[in-house]
Every structure is written in structure tokens, then in C-alpha cells.
Length: 347
Length: 213
Image (cartoon, rainbow over all chains, first blue to last red; front, side, top):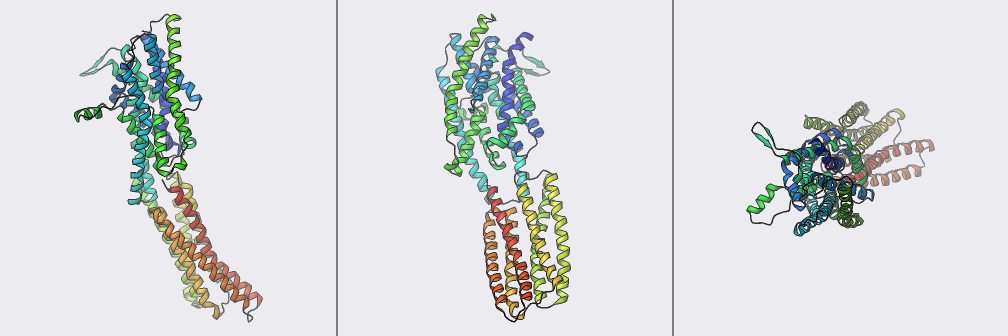
């Protein structure tokens, strides 16, 4: 059991780096512009990210589990580690990189290595969500921006009261964002371990906690630790250097991003769509960074084309292709090393 | 509790804007009393102006302290504090002008009185529009530009009147050169009130653009 937990460390590390980086997408502007204290942001996002992971994380984790039924812990360890390494390499190039894309590359490489078939239809669905994610975030941001601007015009409020209302809204949308981040991105962190979980179900009184829920909880805690220990620097960078949003536009972008993440992880919403005979939304981990870039571009479109830097779109598209390929290559090599050098069964 | 805290600051800002309006009115009425040689009324306006300047100072410092200590409006805090300090200049200028009249006691030739009164009125109008612009800046910035435009208009009118009066002074051969220079100093002093209003209006315009979401 203890040796098994060592193999979870790559997933937990992935969770830590997700917390350190992606919490900035939720609270970066609010903390950077001093609307919300870092301590408040860290507490709220840590709590809601764990709730999101445990309550709403099953959908995306199971999709990841279906794409590659990684049945050995060393194999899952390598897939998560290669995703983390790929994210590290791509981040150095300045591309808004996605853990989701890296983990998919790793899983497909594991399928190749283990000579298991890859569900082509599922891969196509997942790739489609990568493209749809920033577009949908842009669309939501445009709609929300128009609504917020309309409300600013129609409901004139004193500047001091506006400030108080905006702080409250940033906290509420930040909590929603953290929940959605936990629910959607926990699949990246723990999805590959679902089929090789080292835990047994636990019974506490009348409640039974499944092995999957224990994994999701651990992943959530790893993300929360990432937020508490390392996200402050990233938040201040995002808040002050990269986007330079006003609190109102920050509210719009964070809400748009959170809605996208929520849509791609909500089993409840999918059940409603099914009951209405509408097509299902695939429950897939998507990139919160690319969603927020999409949302910022959406606001840029409403404000005027001239404000836009189209280069960033090119960088995102490069990320879609390069991240999974790099992660896949690293994964294939590491699987070979793990199997032949460390003599561990990886499938 | 936070809503209550905001309400107090809002009320204090409103009171401060009212003090600007009152200072502008005392500026007008006090100077008119001086020109119409109503000494008792002028003395009363002097006292009122002194009290208002003191009250405005205390209130402004209180607002600034609260905004900083409670970490309010971090995005536009600098703009708002700058705006309040510039508004303080408007009140200070009105006090300085009225006190200069009291100290130096300039003799106003009868022929100039109507033009000077008109100059005073244009300056007061600039002060009124400025107070409206500030109110809109805090509550509904969509309407701010209408009022700042009025400030610019009245300042321009005041400039034209100022030049006209100075020409009249220096073309009047019955006046001593020292008297002419003394009068010119006071005409420029009166007109400095609307110049001050113009400076604040320009600040408001920029802050309004920055505030747009």
C-alpha cells in the first residue's frame, strides 16, 4: 500500500502545479488589483476546489479512465509524470499550455506502448472540446460583458458601493471558478489512476467512500496545497503583468471561464440534456488558461478589433498540437525505461 | 457592516461636494457684496468662507484616511484622492480671492463694476458645473462629460471677460498705473477660480475614461 502511494506522487505533483498555476486564472486579477486579499482567495479556492473535485469530478475522471484503461500503478505514474514534464517544457516556450492536452498525449502513448486500441471517436470528441473551449469562453465573455455594461448604465451606483458589490461578485465567481476547476481538471490529476487505484472503499458510519472518491479527494487536496503554497506569485503576475483587467472585466472573464469548465464537467447538466433528447456534452478536462485567454479575446472583440493580439491564437493552436505530441513522446520513452530499467509492469 | 461603511463614505463625499458648491456661492455673493460696498454682508461671507474651508479640509482628510485604511476602490483610489485634493484647491482659491479683497481693499471704479460682476458670475457657473461633474463621476459617469464641457465653456467665457476688463483698465487714462496693476491682479485672481475648476474637470474626464469597463 505504502509503495503504491509513492506512484501517486506524479499525479499529486500534477495537482500541486495545477493549483499553483490555475488558481491565478480565477483570483489573479482580484488579488493583483488588491480587491481581495490573497489569504481570502487561497482559503475560498482551496475549499471549493476540493468540493468540486469530490462532488463533480467523477465525470471527467471517468472519461480519462475510458480513453486509456491504465491498469498498473507504475504505468499511471509515468503517464502523469510525462504530462507534468510536457507542461514544464511547453511553459518555458511561453505557450498557454494545458495539462489536459498533455495527459491525453500521455494516455494515447500508453495505449500504443501497451498495444491497446485507442477510441478514435473519443479522441476526436476530446480534441473538438479543446477548440470549442476558448471559443465558447469568448462567446460567454461577449454576452456577459454586454450584460454587465448594460447594468452599469441602467443601474448607476455610487463608485464606493460599486466597489463593494464587485468584491462580493469576485468572491462568488471565484468560488464557482474554483469548484469548476476542481470538478473539471481533477480528471487530469487523478483520471489515469482510476483503474489502478490502490485504495479500498472506506465505511464511515452509514457513509461509504469509494476508492475513486478517495483519489479525487487526495487530488483536490494536492491542488489546494498548490494554491496555498505557490499561487500567490502567479496571481500577482497574472493580475499585474499579463492581462491588466479591471475588476469588472475580471468578473466577466472568470465567470465565462468557470461556466465553460462547469459545462464540460457537469453530470447534472448532461442528465438534463439527455432528458430533453439533446446531444450530450462530453465530460472532458479542458484548459482553464486557454478558456481565460478565449474570454479576454471575447472582450477584446466587443471593445474593438484593434485591441486584439492575434498572435496568441496561433500560440494556442500550436499548443493543441505540440503539447500532446511532446507528452506522448516523453511518456513512451519513460514507459520503456520504467519497464526495462526499473523492471516494473506498466500494463 | 461593509455596506454601512460604504454608506458613510458616500455620505461624506456628498457633503464634501456640497461644501464645494457652497464655497462657490460664497465666492460669488461675497465678492458681489464687496463690489456693491455692502461691508457687513462681505464680513459675514468672509467668516463663512473660513469655516467652510476648515470643514472641507477635515472632511477630505477623513475620507482619504477611510479609503486608504479600509483598502477601498484599489483600482481608482489614486484618481479619487487626486480629485479630492484638486477640489480642495478650488475651495482654497475661493478663500484666497475673497481674503485678498479683504486685506488689500482694492478700489473698484464704478464703470468696471458690471463687467466684474459678470466675470464673478461666469466663475461661479464654472464652480456649479464642476460640482455637478464630480457628483456624476461618483454616481453616473455617463453624464459627466456634459458637465465638464460646461466647465470648459464657462472658463473660456471668463477668459474672454478677463481680457476685456484688463483692456478697459489699461485704456482708462484717469487711473494711476499702480491702480491699474492692482486692479489687474484682482481680475486675474477672480479668473483663477475658473482656471482651477478647469484643471479639476480635465482630471475628471481622464478618470471617467479610465473607469469605463
